[in-house]
Image (cartoon, rainbow, N blue to C red; front, side):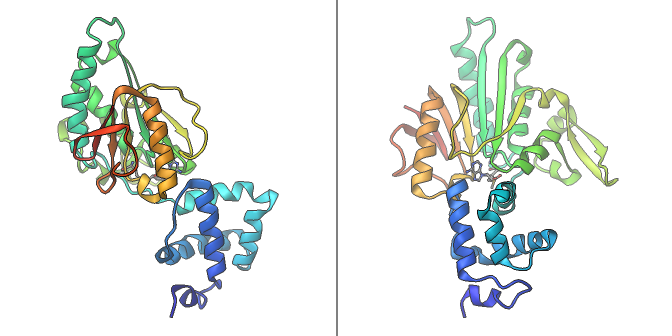
Length: 286
Ligand SMILES: C[S@@+](CC[C@H](N)C(=O)[O-])C[C@H]1O[C@@H](n2cnc3c(N)ncnc32)[C@H](O)[C@@H]1O
């Protein structure tokens, strides 16, 4: 029995053609390749939406997505189907490299500058733990940070995630992974609207970061250059064409010896010759 026919016995019949239409649309919009084993995930995330919209079936939902009135729904679809798993200090060797190699190099290169410049981009920042971790590394390892023109850009296609990131408020147990001395210096405990204990990012970190929605497969308004780009656990969802396009654009926006940090299962092998590998999933622009 195929996954699609199993699903057809659910509350809303979900046929192969529905999955194919939605997979085609999300590929066109976000470059995300939805393999057939994602049928269950797509169904469960969208069935909820059909209920909320009081639609009678997936035919009606696909018709809505195709219609002029469906433009906003397309945004919802992207938000619903992206995978947003992230955490503070995830793949921590990148943050060690940032603090021990990239920042000292940037400092040395600009030793004569009265206002040294530093630009770091978290591309595919999800709910914000990645850019806040970058900010924590900067704030905890650069005693003269105020003297710097240092900015972190954090972008994601998922508008809901960008809002969450901007708020900088997390479940209390999200603090696991943040070194206690850093956690105590740059975050504080509070209560959310639901009365639950939360971990809040301090303004000192928030001030360093600009959060923006951005689809990596569409036009990028920023000019760079960036000293580093973190694009971790994002490219895995793209096909080869999308991946190559994004990497070429990263190469264009990085300083000539800038760093690119990828996720643990990602590599530039066969994708780009514009970088050389300098560490595990750490690449440097040639
Ligand atoms: C698994 S999360 C990775 C978060 C973080 N970089 C990390 O490694 O912890 C992948 C993120 O990529 C975003 N994403 C997927 N397709 C995208 C696209 N076309 N443009 C921008 N962001 C995208 C998703 O919304 C999601 O938040």
